[in-house]
Image (cartoon, rainbow, N blue to C red; front, top):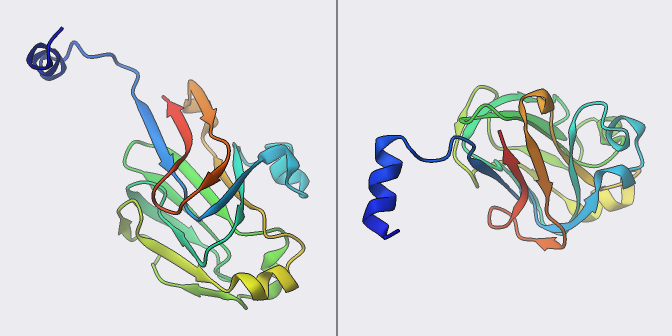
Length: 169
């Protein structure tokens, strides 16, 4: 089938119904299995399924287009609802709430419409490596009941560039 017949088919509505949604790296680093996070809430997928990232950069960005739901008062975590109805949660480190916001700077605001790659929170990685229990950063999908399939990427990822999760809704 040629390009124009594919395009015509897509426009006429005969395209496949299940789309793949890419969730892009909200921070640079190495992907780690969610089960390896030293916190039972994430490791046992109580808040959702996904991956974790061992960060190498200094910012967390929107992993897709959407609206910021909540940014924790201590600026260590945020939730986002994507334009495609995916509910995401990005939580920097483990027990980082105990730092009372030290090492984090909020850039975006709750309720703000964001595009993939927009900076939400900046952080001081060296300070956090020294002070936090762990800097492993879970990236989880909290509405897994609406997901048909979740594919988890592996390896090293670059913020706002590489996919970390592929979702089939």
